[in-house]
Every structure is written in structure tokens, then in C-alpha cells.
Length: 350
Image 1: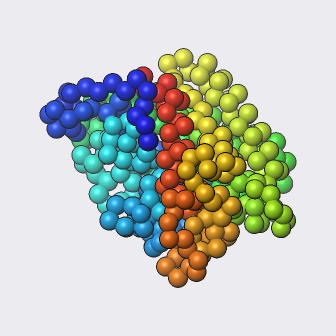
Image 2: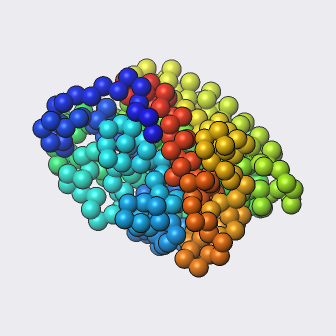
Image 3: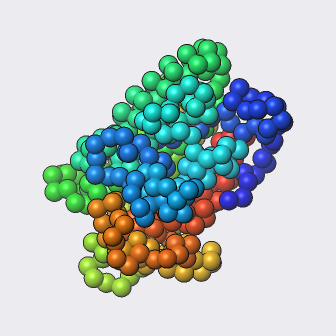
């Protein structure tokens, strides 16, 4: 992934850097949301939404399945690297998330979660509201580690990433007969939760927030298999239209939030466009297959129940694929998507 534009490198020793090392653009990164950024929190809770078995992680460091829903790096890894860190900050629920390991931030995300807590409860994962409570705990731990003044400086200068919404649609709204809401009503519900989330983070000191848009989830192989009615279309237009309508509301809401909180830098980070481009024109980025995932048949596999060591048909080389399983991008695709976020992140951190 290319470096952030206007990358300023300071050869100054920060509290968690050795003398002479380049200092990251922000003191820390905080991540909230779902599997696009989760690096293993679900390994430490009782849920079926796990990715801590092969072939997940087969192209990651030491070929270890860490809980990332990918063959390798996820978006949080690439974002961390672009900011000057070695990767994503530590997953908050792992035993090692303490002391100096928390100085460069924490990853609170939980795969299968969404804006709507009910989505997380359906799959027994960590809801966004609880992720915010974990962040509150994190703040107290940070004060103990570095003192109140430095902790506040880290909190206010850090970059915050919110990645949510896809699961609310794909694994709740579209399949749950007990949600008696129109698409507009449901999207308004999610936008309201986002507004409250930003207000809570702002109240706890956050001043730089990037909000992922919904990706073009109608192009995910699982969506095409389940909602495509047996057609040969690359994407399910109806689902992508829902994502675009939500994203328009998201942009309007973020604009209003930036006016409400005058010292808050907040921006929408577009996932829809780069994923759609990868799916409809994979060759432009050196990829080949965007119609199915690498794992198993690539049409329905997601989580270890269907994408596992005995999945028949798993591809030998994921670098040619847009999707790893039937929902999640490969490391190669994540690299392209993260690269497209550079300008938006740059506006937040400079």
C-alpha cells in the first residue's frame, strides 16, 4: 500500500518508540465495528463467528489463523501500516492487551457485529455499544499507564475508524422476518446509532473519526448466491441500491456532525467504489476472479463452518481473487481498497 500523502516522518522518540525510529502520524489508532477490521477479538468469546482455523490466515505471518476473516491482512493492518505502525493495534480482548501494548491504540471490532446491537446479539458477538464500553475501560487503563495529561493527548490525537452496517443488512434485515421496517426506516435507525456513537466518542475525547461507507455488498458471492435468484449477474442491483441509499444518508449525517462539533475532523471513507471496481474490473488491479471466493466453492462459505481445512475446491493462490470466502475480500483486494482510502485518512490526520 502506498504511503499516506504528505507523510511527515519525525525522527523523534515517542513514548512507545525507540530513539531514532520514525514516529507514526498519530499517536494511536482505535477501531470499532466488524470483520473488515477485526483481528481476533471473536477468538475470546463464545460465538460461531470465528476465523481462527485454517485456511484462514494461510498467507498471514507464520501462516497462522489469527481470527482475521481473510487469507492474510485485513483493512486495519494496512491502515496501521500506512500511518507508520507495524499493523493494526492490539485486539482488545486478547490477554496481551495491557500495559505498553495499549499505547498505540486498540482494536475493539467484533466480526458479525453492526450498528444495530440486535445484529450482534443474533450471532453472540460484541455489539457496538459494548465496544464503546470497552473503549471507556481502555481510557482508564491508559491513564494508569501514562498519566492523565498524556492519556488525554493520545485520546484526542488518535485516529478512530468505524466499520459497520453490512452485517445489519446481509445477516439481519434481509433475513429477519421480525424487522417490520422499510429500507428507509432501517437505514434511518442505523444512521441514528452512528450519530450517537460519534457523540459518545466525541464526549470521551475523540477528535478524528473516519466512518466506512457500506461496501457494494450486493457483489459479494454469498449475496449473489442467496439473493441473485440463480441469475448470472455480477452483483445484485437491489442490494447495491440499498447500500448507495444508505451511503447518501451517511454523507449527509457526517456533514451535519462536522458542523455540530466544530473541532471534530470526521469523514466518510468510501468502500463502495473500490470494491465495486474490483468486482466489475478485477484485471485493472491484476486480479482475475471476482465471481467466487477462493475458499471452497466460493459461493456460500463464510466462517469456519464452511470455510475450513476440509473445504473442497479451495484455490491454491488467493492473490488472483477479489474475495477470500463468499463475503470477505482477500489480502490483495484489501490492499487495493485500503490504498483508495489514503486521501480521506490524510485529511483526518494532517
